[in-house]
Image 1: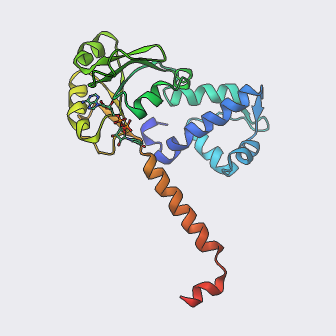
Image 2: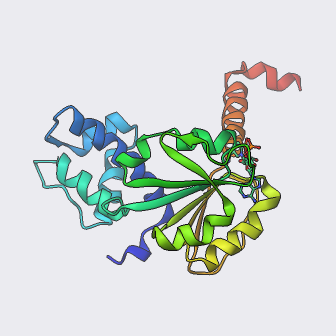
Image 3: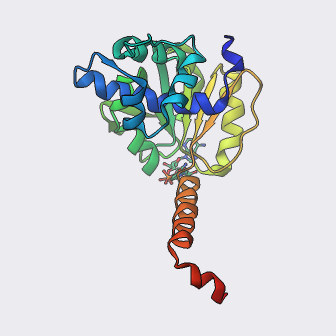
Length: 221
Ligand code: NAI
């Protein structure tokens, strides 16, 4: 099946499959049935079969899924068999926290540079990576084959930076700033908004609260 026809919902579930399979691999689990995987992931077994069938179905009747094979196939679908060079722009609270997180490398994302405009931060070393001036950005991107730029700058600075980055050849922007970016078609933006996730949590808590109310309460309203 053509990759383009696969629904966004399926693609959104793949990182979770990948994480679970990674945990199984660490425990030396060789194979797993869709039923067992479904119990672990709290997704129905038929959903799992349907999702994985989108990619040609990796399971075998009566055998289940070979964990290592499925893990490596999903990793290819997610593009994780490739290596990406990343830069972080904005070395404040969030930029430093991301730079300090070493696990991205295990997934193939390598932080090559960190940039800021603040002279007090320039020259600082974060996990062995020197914070550089944004004056060096264009040359650094070109010389170090940077694929992805992480934006952790104030939101007012993000639109101009995004268009500069696109001109300098960046193809992926991991945008943490609370603003929607306009970029050329060949640039992909992935927005990460923790506040939106909190709002979803708030909605779910409110929903649960409503469900937990004794029925006669609703009659009182
Ligand atoms: P911060 O103020 O600690 O860091 C921002 C850094 O950007 C500063 O070091 C500043 O000197 C630098 N900067 C300013 N203009 C720049 C430019 N043109 N080029 C390069 N660097 C520049 O702020 P914090 O808390 O780290 O937040 C950064 C951004 O992330 C903000 O837009 C904030 O709203 C957003 N944010 C997003 C979250 C999310 O869930 N997506 C969570 C927390 C913050």
